[in-house]
Image (cartoon, rainbow, N blue to C red; front, side, top):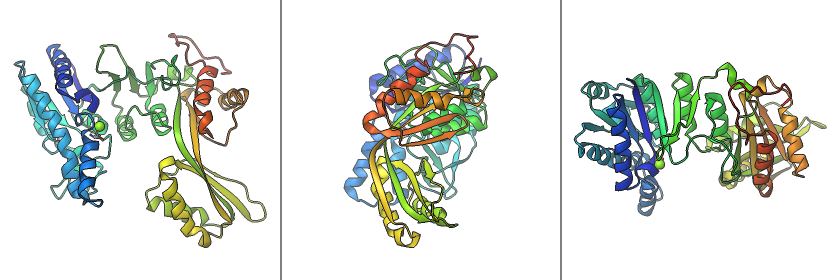
Length: 416
Ligand code: ASP
Ligand code: MG
């Protein structure tokens, strides 16, 4: 008998039929003898719809009230799912985040979990009940309801799995797991059997939209195995877990694609201490998420600094920098929109040289110009023109033979 946390996203509980299907899935698990905690998101697009409703009332809602509003979506799902299970004569009980013992800090709309005291959850489990918990919400020290940031139910699920000492946290979604790349771009993309937390974090940061990145960080911190799998089939999905040595045999695990980035270049800034701190400090204050940063080496006491931001943040970024231009002493600021980022990720890179070279060659053979490059220990990322993006993904996927199934014991060659 194991204790499992099963998380279902909004699309899995979008209507009555789907809720009934999730209920059967959950009951089936309980009947097998496992103890089951379920975490659910709001039905379908309800969170978006609630946001849209608020926008119709005011363009500046108090964040506290926004949280009051957004937290209602999940409450709809937990009650309906619990009813669907009770209807079949099995015992289920629903709890809001606060009832389940989620405590968070004082920030609204993107609060961080401080701790979880799952007293009611444990009691219900001990009684043999199926426990249904609302994702995305918690209580703060003022006894106000807060939400954990969009996509936050993943975080609720993983954190709760840690708190109740579950054997595994299962994330149910409409795809069969984590793929080597987006199957809509590369139809031969394969489902990955197992992947490390670090790789998954890099993939999430580089544009793969499987799970919320914060939830993976929590999984990593507490070594909670996360099983990403399909709501609609019983097939095993992808296990995100602590790195084991044979993971390194696979040099590149996946190719991530972020199709909408903008490149900002500040030309000719004086090469003196504090310039970068000032510039990026101002951007951070405005909540701009800066990604790749490249500074050229100085020529005659000046250099260029380029970086990327999500396409949607380009206007805000330019506005912040234009205000700063004079005090920075820069000669100009240029924004290039419609860029894309293609990243290859794999823990095997640490021990297998030549990954970057192979990636660059694949792009070169496809006559794709690389605009910017950045690397981490387990990632090589290239910024290219948006119009070249999908082709670059296909070339990289092919170059690293990601379409070929890796059988057990098949070792990567020293030179990838
Ligand atoms: N319902 C929330 C959202 O749509 C939380 C979640 O789905 O994970 O962001
Ligand atoms: Mg959602």
